[in-house]
Amino acid sequence: LVYKEYCEAMTDLAMKILELLAISLGLERTTFRRFYQDSCSLLRCNFYPPCEEPDLTLGTGPHCDPTSLTILHQDHVGGLEVFAAEKWRRVAPRPGALVINIGDTFM
Image (tube, rainbow, N blue to C red):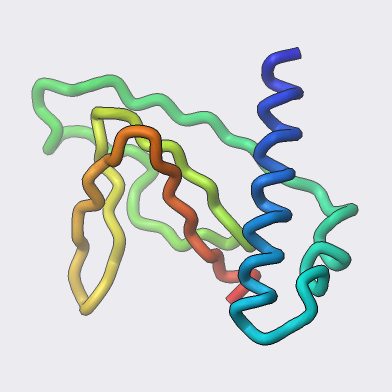
């Protein structure tokens, strides 16, 4: 039940983000909602406990997000990096914040 409710909440959040993206692009608010409302979503839960030797960890490795949106909750461990200006840069976790990545499909 908890997982189902979490999935529904994330879907609702994604729809609201898509509405904001439409507005920011000068489109009708519901443009993307109409496109995505009946689509399938993927929810993946990764957990990486703290490691005494972080240079030996692999995580998910460098990748692009092939989806439309990625909604990421970082914990205190961190580890998220983004590739910008030709180099990998760490993204410090912010308590209570969600990281929103626009994926390849949406781009």
